[in-house]
Image 1: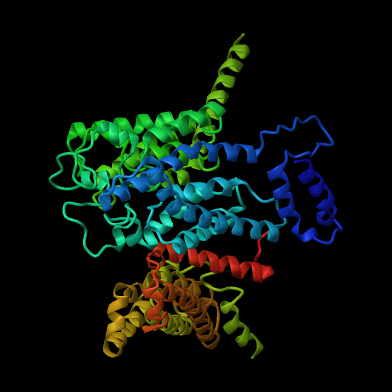
Image 2 (image 1 turned 30 degrees about the vertical axis):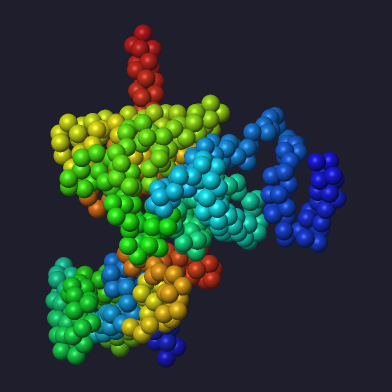
Length: 398
Length: 205
């Protein structure tokens, strides 16, 4: 560690003003603060510099994603073993999944960081840390069989159009990781939806084995004569297995348990807002309950199952709580989360074209978040103005 | 002569109807999926703008200002019907692809805008040149957008396949998002971005 510090100190002057490699100073700065706590001192005014800066913040989110990621890797292997009819050990499944998922992680990080470094150089800004989380989120919300070049194109598109044109991390209107998924979903629907993309190896087969189906539980639920959830070889699966996540789906979204562990870490460290998660839960549950009670829509399942299916848990824990794109006011967070949960279920149940509505719901709420904040702030101003006026009146009449 | 050159070239750059005045966005999203209809649409709008400018400019001293909008609409509608019939007679396939958007040239803000802003206050010949310039500025953006959209969306340009089959065999897939109107809007945004960053005059303070 000491040797590294000495080395950094030695090469530092080259990147400072007047140095030979000054034009690369933002890249150098990024690496330095990535390795060591920033030693910047504020010169004027009383400020306290906390070591809990954006980099640490983002790393905690990445840590919280780890349970979902590791479970997802195991699940990739497990689903594949169902397809080929082998019984593998836990580690075999995990390493199979690791080999499939790791390239996606590398591609999303390389493309995302590449864009980030280039744009930081052009603008002479610091490199923003948001891409650390985005790069980890993207592999978790795509199907395992997605071609790598598509991941790269989509990541570059969404980092530039979703984030850099607005001014980088902190200025973006929509969540870049979700935008990546939306781009993939609309640009290459054959690789992002349907029954053939969720289990590794299915898309390459000419003909599926007898009795085998690659459909996710969510798309099973939308079929005409749906009687109960089954796994890909036709065995019935219980709600407990849905909760654990041994089902086909995007890499990181299947296990509600792993996501809950992540949510626990996020709430405990105060990185993400529990209000958004909780109100999204209430919104989703109440809407699903209402729709089940009325008996409308194309999906006839117990309302609580919605929480375990598809990307609901993942979206509401990791996507909707993005501090940049969510509502900023405390009351606004309740409204924002509630509407995100509600709309996700509405799209799911009432729209047969999209069995999964979480992505669209959160993107829509991202766009609405500033409006919610505006009205919350206005309402507060009005309330206080009224209070001020009424107390003035009392003084006046005395 | 210098002024008529300016009237002709200014709409191509400094006062481009799409990227600077932000008019005619609607049709530029709808007809730019492929290059051929975009070119036909560009030519049609250019002709309608030029001739309606010319006619209104001839009539400008006789139109009572209270009913000028309806007079303008009559002139534009008549011209659009002529264009529509010509397209149906000579390029039937393209006319079918453009479908309702030929009729909707009537509501294209560029035409009405030029009539109000230019033809009512200028002589017929400059008005005609102004119409040509604005139509060309509109058509130019249409062609740029449709080139990109057709290339990435269907791998073709003017109906000819550009991306070789070998690419498709290697796993290349056409981008489905670029065919949808939202992506066309984003591309217009990108064009406006590039245009403004190149021409410093257009940057607002």
